[in-house]
Each structure stands twice: as structure tokens, then as C-alpha cells.
Image 1 (cartoon, rainbow, N blue to C red):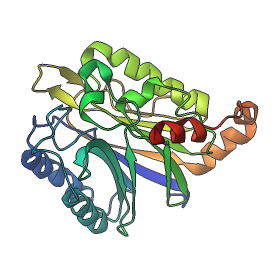
Image 2: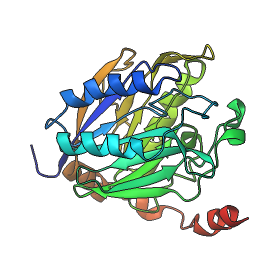
Image 3: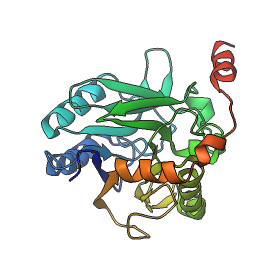
Length: 267
């Protein structure tokens, strides 16, 4: 494998409703299988509970960081996924990107899902967050963020956008289409990991986790609707070659979200 390539493993799982112990035990089994075999593992949104609006007594604290640090170190890979998290003041839907050296990046979901009342339970995040690992730059995103292209516009020269989700069956066609669109418009790889099964509210999820290249080509067989692990290899050389030949990003609009989101957070 070229030194610029990146192995990414997607874990598409049937989450146990509001049961952190069961979910962490299940996910641990899969993480152990990947020890020494991949560079990055991506988990679904709220992988400890499912997409619940009942964080009291269920939300993670710093112990989830220890859990991810342990697996990342043993597996020698990075991990990205989101959990309901209690900051000591409020609850957030928090994305965690954990590296094997125990350094990490946090991203709190910006676009809380008002249709489910997420905005009434979880504090809204602020700035988009990017992070680097093994020479690759990642944009961290969570579920509903996918519907807002301005927020993910590639003004930060990231290589891969990571979307973790609990995206239900009635709108899965939008999930498929929007992941593909984000890849094409941003000339980046897009990795989207969704869950399967039924949650405690009766909502069904069919997975469709997928990886798209810069031209919007699907890199996994579609649709993927079962629990399991799939791996893709991302090519930095290939990414740079396409960007060099198709210089669409050079014509992108120049703008910054810093001022508007900083003002919002301070209001």
C-alpha cells in the first residue's frame, strides 16, 4: 500500500436502545477485530445509546474518552463517532476523533435536529472542526449537518468529510444523494456511517453507509443494509491528481463562517 493511502473501516451496527453497556460491549468486539488492521474506524452517531432525547443518566462523561483512548492505542488506529455527552453544565451531541497517541479533537453537533426536539435537549455547537491524522485533513460532521452545504463548504482544504448518523428509512434517499453531493461539490472523499435496526421510538434505519470519491463514485457495494464492518482504501495521490486536473476548488466562493458562528455562540 502506498504510504499516502489511508485504510478506513466503517462499523454499521444495530444499536441497543438507551443501553450504553450493551453497545460498548458490542462495539468493543468489532474494534478488537480491527486491531493493527486499519488506520481509521468510523462509528455511527450516538453509538452508546441510539438517537435518544433522554440523556439523564445515560450521557457519557470523560470515561468515554478513556474507552476510545484504550482501543485506539491497542489498535493503532484513530476512531471517530459521536455520543450524548454531559459537560457538567449541559448536554451535547459530541463527536470525538481519537488518535492512538491519546490526542483527540471534539466537535459538538451544530445543526441539532429540530424535528425530533434535539435543540431542546442538546446544546448547539459552534464552529466547524477539522483535524489531521497521518497527513490527511478531516472535517468532522454529525447527521443533520449533512443538509447544510454552506457549513461543510471546503474553504479549509480538507481531504475527507466524516459524517456519522442515525438517518432513518423514510429519508434514506436524501442521505444517499447528499453524501454524494458533498463529495462532488467539495472535491473530497466523503465517509458516511449510519446505523441499522429499529430504535425505541419505532424509527427504522437501513444503514446505507457509504464512501464517495471526489467525482461522487460510490466505493462500497450499494446498498449496504446489514450489520458489520467494511473497509475502503483512500488514495491521497489520487485525490491530489483529480484536484490538479479539475481545479474546481480554485473557483469556489470566498467566505468565512467564523464571524457568524462566533457571534451566535456569544449571544
